[in-house]
Length: 214
Image 1 (tube, rainbow, N blue to C red):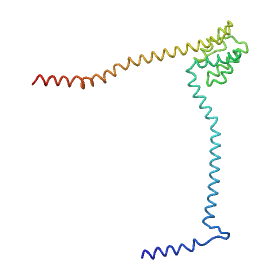
Image 2: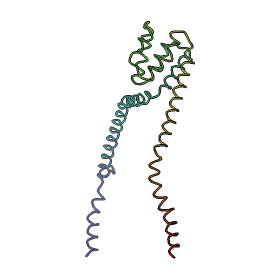
Image 3: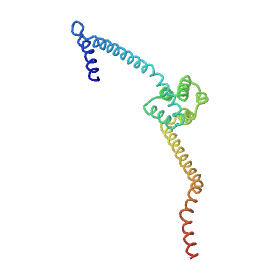
Image 4: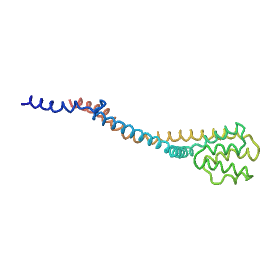
């Protein structure tokens, strides 16, 4: 019975496989070709939309990078001092160096540098050009003040200020490491002292006590 069923199924499918459209194109092949064309068209549209999405995300990514850089740059006054020193060493005047570094420095500190540069170019006094600035900009203004008011060379002043900032940072790191070592003494003692007593002293006491009892 099973053999007859197999033969019937094969015989029923043979006439349909032999049918071809004029020109030797099978209807199933035609449908598969059309679906393939539609799939390629849809893939192209998806790829184009993805490329447009990546292009649209460019400004957003740059803005996010600037925000992250601003949050990390606020904590590094030494880097800002070094950049201003490089601009001055290249031959730029103090306002031009501040404006150039401020345009490249992200966040409020960069805007403060640009404002200070414009105020100095307009003839404002040194103290008036630096209102309500951050730590990094304040250190830069403090290092540049003798150069602007007394005519001293600005590059050595900026480099010395950057070295002082890095020395303070290293000293703070060493002090924090020392405090951490002191703070870890008690927890380590609480953890290791019972283990030392149980593993090192208790077996010795037990063996001595058993020897004496004998």
